[in-house]
Image (cartoon, rainbow, N blue to C red; front, side, top):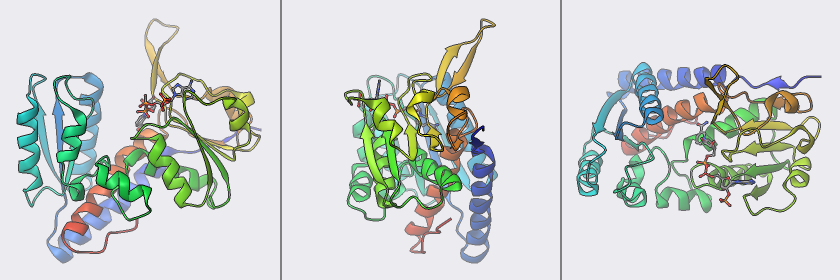
Length: 294
Ligand code: NAP
């Protein structure tokens, strides 16, 4: 029997609809229009495409956008002074600096310079620390999207065995903390983990955030497990072009999993929808209003 396909596109569209409704109400009842500033330095094609989608979707949900495209030769001092201006601009409620940054700029310095209350990517050490100790925080968008997706197929995570493969600060680590907060029993695996297939086979919920094409195979998966594939990998296609695959061997894993996200159209659209949700949360917090729960 084939796995249920978790339709990230449709679930993301639903969340964007809820965000747009909230934005409309905030404007009507409070005169508040959330605003997102997006900063892109350089001409990396993937980054340009991500930024364009983020701006389009933000504007599409009724929010204001502030688009800062900067040359790859930008200095760290110039970027820090832009961040300082955005921090003090009351029309800007969220600041997103698209990574990676040009080599001459230290990303940690830039992230630390963002006002934590406007840090809609959730990468600032204050937000990372608040998440780690279980306090309300602006939380990274991709992990938020993963939890939302898994709940559509497995609503009650409490007590489930979850494995997160990959421990990056933007995906794996915060995802493990979110799952722990939902009372899952969490294994956080990485490149030094031993017996990874055997650990995976124990899990009710498998999250792959590695960046290795189709690494997770059919015999790693317990029958009926839910599989969330974060990976985005470009590989050569038969026709001399390229195509995008995830970290999970989708066709063979679909034969055994209970539910699975496709790549593309799984986690990717959720990341942007959660960014919009975070921007509205940030705007509400700055206005002293209760943050919407979505
Ligand atoms: P990253 O920073 O490169 O981290 C990769 C993680 O995978 C590291 O923790 C690494 O372990 C671990 N790893 C590497 N090889 C492994 C192996 N053989 N077995 C087990 N673990 C291994 O990557 P990332 O930024 O988290 O991104 C991961 C993937 O998700 C990428 O394909 C990226 O493009 C994609 N992504 C997608 C979205 C989206 O919106 N869909 C968003 C962000 C990222 P060590 O820590 O030991 O090195």
